[in-house]
Image (cartoon, rainbow over all chains, first blue to last red; front, side, top):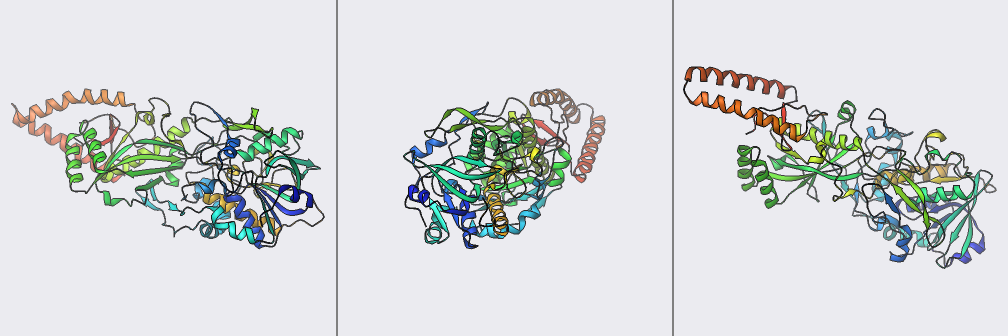
Length: 482
Length: 83
């Protein structure tokens, strides 16, 4: 059911089994799963039922670094969270993504893909995904991969009816958590602000932060600052190891035989380095996107090629004329190395409830450039070996100049900041998602990712939420605790 | 147009270096072509055949190894026999 008023909800002083902070894909997945197991759930959403510009302004965050972007894009402070505006791109992380691939870069998770695979089918059903196409080797060092597309599922639309008629779940909108009140190594209560600024106290046996890849860190940093470091007792990594998926154009390519590639509904053919290629060449995971160009753009590509290989260009133009070959824009979305200096910190400015805004320190480095270049060269070499096409790389990929600031830059995939680790020294949450040292506080969503591979994160977020739901249901606390 | 060979990964010379290499290679090719088409037909056939055999053999070996000798020209990653 949806709560009529935050005031009445607080007055009832009900102790819920689980309180979920945030109603995006992680929060709503947890809510529906826990509800079906009979647990009482309080689902708090800081925004309203619909997207609202004033509410959205609460998410403003300054990005500090050479590449600036609007950190409010693709976050939504409303019921359904970012699922109300996502693109639907889905792909699970590769098995290699859970391990260290490059010496000196910590991309390892404390769990493996085998721990998430049991939740894949349920996650696919939640996201209404079509059947998967298996990856296949393409040459010795590349894989032809694919992306699956959710319709895309808007969690607010899909799950609102279920939550509205539920007897176990209470959804409270315009309920912004502004503090976690710690007592004796656990969270005793949440302080929640209504739209008029009135503060209320709500209680649950266990609390799960599902507020997003920036807000989870922000809330924990703020609560930890207010409570003398007792919420996250080992805060060394809190807010740190934050990362994105860099999104840039690497160059262009001529494909001699366009039918060698399967272009999907977005006119994209996908490829990635194989696990062995990543290890041998020290590459992070890279999703190469070959975006098919229209005829005129393909012809212009062939003309550019004529400056360096006129005979080849003549062949290209002739085949393009017969629609046998085509030009592609070579783009990539790839893995960023998790680094401590990329992080969420609390700003000196605050939102209207007095909570410091997030400040995002973020930059890309040589591991990212090396990985993109390496993957592009693998593609170039394989195309040349097969005489299946040729690749041209942009100067910055080859080391001339920095990352181009006028490109897409990032994928709006906010990951890390409350990374998962076996030991408190190395991360914020344990392999189950529980904050190290805090008995009843959990984190869900992409902020717990220790690394992000090259896959869009939503499918993994839902898999992790399902796994956490199973854990919470199997380890219900006795009624007297909290 | 023979140029600085590159392996697929990881080290790449910069486009400038590769372009300079291409310019350096051009005169040799022009000489070979002049010989082939010109004054000393016997020597020309010997030179051309030798270069061709070497090139084809190298290419076949490289392709067989899955690692053709590539060259970088103005950002284009080309085979050594691309014209």
